[in-house]
Image 1: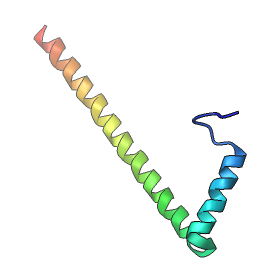
Image 2: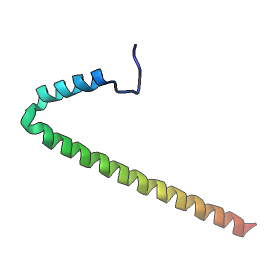
Image 3: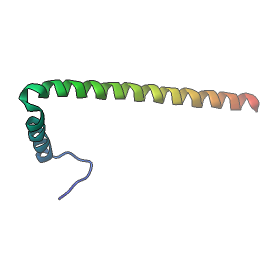
Image 4: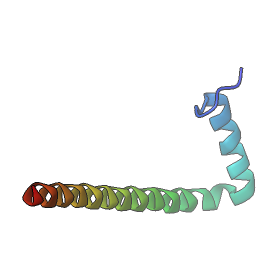
Length: 68
């Protein structure tokens, strides 16, 4: 059975084996750290963008109320 969007344990094992073959056991921790930093930066930037959008929506709502 194929499930899209879900990582099954078998898929995780296959990905880990492929990563070990490509990067080797010595480089794998470095790759993991780099990926972790990238994900953290991405999440932080997404939160910043979300906050800006909410702020802009709030400002727009306030301007509309003043015009009424």
